[in-house]
Length: 184
Image 1 (cartoon, rainbow, N blue to C red):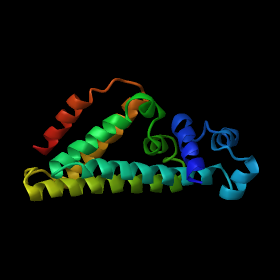
Image 2 (cartoon, rainbow, N blue to C red; image 1 turned 90 degrees about the vertical axis):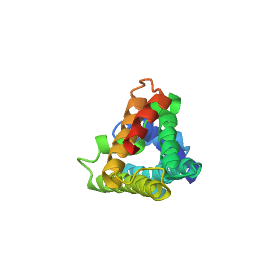
Image 3 (tube, rainbow, N blue to C red; image 1 turned 135 degrees about the horizontal axis):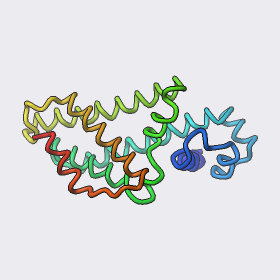
């Protein structure tokens, strides 16, 4: 099932919800139409399952990047570099399912809006925690407003995903260097 959902994630990331048909999903997931309806009921249920799969995988990638740091500041630096990497090349062109869902569906689908909001809040809380960790270990000054700065970092990370989808070049080292000045 995870493999089939990973394939659905790819289609939804590339095409969006409305431009994806059940036919697109059956081809990508390598399942018969009846099997999709039996397992998921409808396209919306496939989308919600794919969204959950995507966010779980991305959350693990983000936490893995953070774990490679030795202090709070390094952890945030690694998270930002991870977002840059995910926003470039073929991966960047596929886009972020959270950003795409926010833009395409949040205004018209309360279930998706709630999941997008919850995921962004989870990410923001994670960044705020890393800022507080950096303040505790001395790598980030105490005057940095953790919650407000975390919100701004989320705006940056989601903006990176939009720029990647738009196929604009990203100088990751330079951009991350500028973003890290928020923690000075």
